[in-house]
Length: 488
Image (tube, rainbow, N blue to C red; front, top):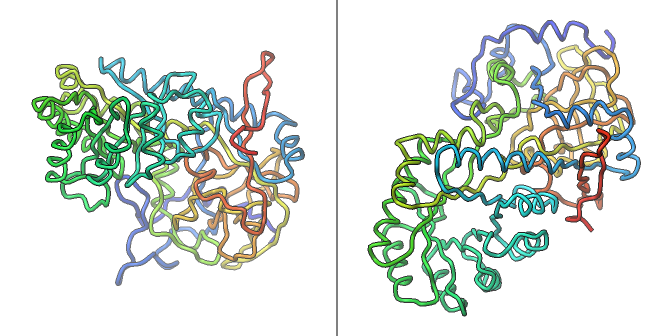
C-alpha cells in the first residue's frame, strides 16, 4: 500500500457507532468501565485512521488569499518562518454587526474589545476607527491601545488586584475601572485625582466558585466606600460567566439592573451593566462538527493521543446573534431602556471571528503506520506555542489548508513542530489533507486570530516569534500588506 489510501474519502462518509459530546463542547464519552477515553474496540463502524474532516468556514478574503497564486509564497519567502495574517476589515465588520444588534433592540450599548485575545496593533487601530473601546488588564495593554488612537475614556480596565501603576494611569486618563476587591477600591481612591475615578464593581455570581468578583457583603462595603469618597464615581456593575449560555447572561444582567437601581437610591450614578465576553464563534459547519463528535476516537490520533474535551467549534448563533438572544430573553432590552441603563460587552474571540489565519512551512515529512495503514507525519517551521489550543490540553479542530492547491489523493496527516519536544504537535489527529504534503508547502490554519496566535507565544529554542501581517484591499482587487506594528 502506498502513502495515500484512496478509500479514505469513502470511509469518512460512514457514521460511527459511538456518540460523544456535551452541550456547548465536543467532549469524549466515558468508556464502559471506569470512565476514560474510548478505546479502539468502541471506536467507529469503519476502520479509517484518518479523522473526520472539519472544514473551516472561510470568508471571501480568505478564499482570495488561498486562490492567489503567489502572495502566500512571497510572504513565506520574505519572512523566512511561520507568520500570522490579519484582515482588519473583517474586525470592522464584526464591530458593526454587534452594534447593529444593539440598535435593533433599541439599547444603548458599548463594545470593549478584549485585548488579551490578540495583541495586533491593527485590531486596536480598527477599534479606534470604528468607535469601539478596548478592555485592558495591564499598563502594556493600556498604552498599546492608546498608541493606536483609543482614548482613555474608551478604555475599560479589568483584572484582579491591579497594580498601583495601572490604577493611577487608568484613573488619570479617565478609563472605566472594574474593581475586584475592597482593598483595590481603597487603593484606587487614594491614587485617583483630580477627577473622580470612574468605577465599576465586579459581582461574584451566585453559586460561583470563581476567585473573581465581590460577594454581597463586599458589595455593600464597596457601596459605602464609594459613597463616602469624592475620589470615586460608581458607574455600574459587571460580571463574567464561563461558557456560552445566553439565557444565564440575560438573567444575571437583570439582577445587575436591580443593583444599579439600589445604588441610585444611595446617590450613585450607576447607569451601566457589563456582561463581559463569552460570545461564541462558528468555526465549522454543524454537520461536520456532529460527525466528528459521533465518531472521534484514539484510532484517529498519532500515538493514540486523546483529549477530554474540545472547544465548541460549531456555534449556531455566534457573536451578534447571541447578543440579540441575550437582549430578547426576559425582555432585557426593554428593562434596560426603561431604567436608562447602558449595556457593555467585552468580546474578544467573537470580535476577531474570521479575521486571521496562521501559516507554517513544511520542512520535513515521514511515513508512519497505524493499524497497518500509512500516514504522513510532518514537521513545520514553528511550534504549537503559536497555535495555543494544544497548551490547554486540547486540539484546534478546524482543518489546516494545504497551499498551493494541487490534485492528489487524500492523505491522513499529523503535524508536528520544529522543537525537541515529542509532545509539541500542532495537530495530533490525522487530518485528511487532499494530497501528500511536500517540503516547501504551506499549511494554513484558518480563523486563528482569537487567542490562538499569541496567548502562549514563546521564543523557545530561540525560534523567531511569528510576525503578524496585516492585509488590506487594493483598488484593483489585490491585497496590500504591511507588517503589523505590534512587533519590533
